[in-house]
Image (cartoon, rainbow, N blue to C red; front, side, top):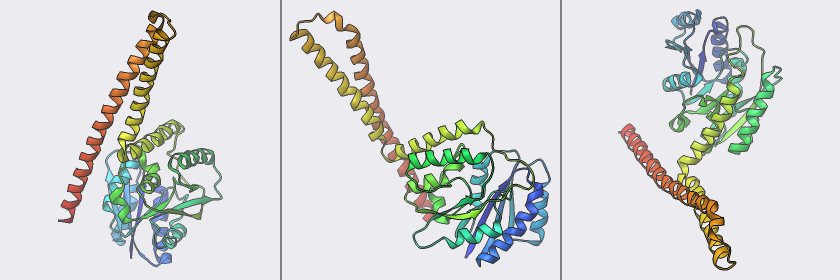
Length: 307
């Protein structure tokens, strides 16, 4: 069985030679053939030269380059297209994960019915652990996933790539996206190691971005399944609220005998609710058409690929 180990990097020159060596040992320990797909995401150091030199004697090492830094999501889009293995293993380039230990652990967990295996960091000691707990709690709440560590190393079957669409900073939500589409994920304990050299590319400014991205991913995943349920529900609540308000106003005027001009602001409010409700309902119909068209295009693409 061929396993694709995908490792993107940016300015990690001092770590790459050890990563390549440990990846080779990891493949041997797991009893599988490995290819190492590495994406240089706009490095300004000599990291690419280290990988190119290793590839001269190790043909299973393959390098792909971005001329400028595009971010981890784009690096994944580049690398995943080049992976040829039955299983894809994603690892970082900072050596907080040791490939010789983690590749066998991830591969061993692929039992029948398991599509995704996540590594659950053990012995982690750094300031980001608090932020990770917040991220995982939000993900469990929004997506109903019982895993404890969804944003680190992971492995998944090749078939998952067919349902994986990444944009923006959605590399953090691979597990959430795939499980929402019916793939089964488990996790295994793996050892966390402190970075030996270089510095983390994670910044505090990404915290609000990650939060809003999680909301966006949840909305998109729900929206593409049943857009009318979202827009229609909001529209009908507003529509019938307006009708109830008008009915109460008529009762107040003709039964209780109160003057109608006293209710003029409420009348305008009910009219706004009524029109807004109609707009949401029509938006739901349009969204259903968009999703239907998208599904037809996807079906045509799948038929074309089969041919």
